[in-house]
Length: 210
Image (cartoon, rainbow, N blue to C red; front, side, top):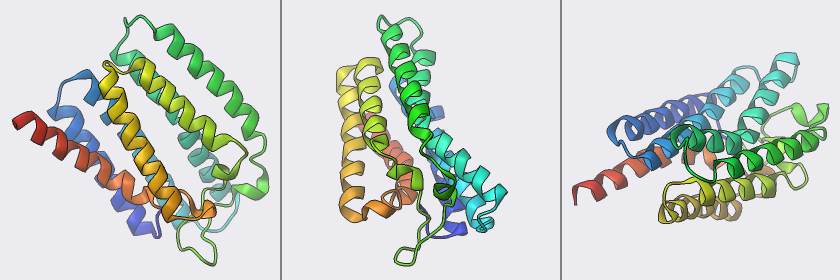
């Protein structure tokens, strides 16, 4: 992800700041869900800051790596939980619950492959960013994205809002795949985490005053 300890911390605070502005300035359910989700995604940068502070691959480093893996892999679950929290009475809430349960079972199965050798989250010789090795687990990436898309389509208040969320999600995904190699796939998300909430807030504010 980020290329330095300082970049990780700046990305973390900017992400939380932008998500906080979204959450407290706007009062519609869609923005509340998106802001809370982006704030949760920002927590990854705090874990990364800890990994930069403790780069030696010992017990502490491995525990931080596992925490990062859990934060990353739980993001679709958090998205579903936020929808259930902010929309407790919508008709398809049980389908969201089943999607979350099914995703959790499959992720637990995949995580058995997160062996000791993968738990060293370090930069490599041709890229200065920290490399999240669990993104290289077979099929994990596809499962993560598919679950987020399905939960968004089913659970967000309006279909056009789901398309907005999914469109931004897919644009960032495609851009990161084109810009970075497979081994450093998550690197550009350091910048996405920092600036997507702020840009989203600005665009949302401009739309509201037009």
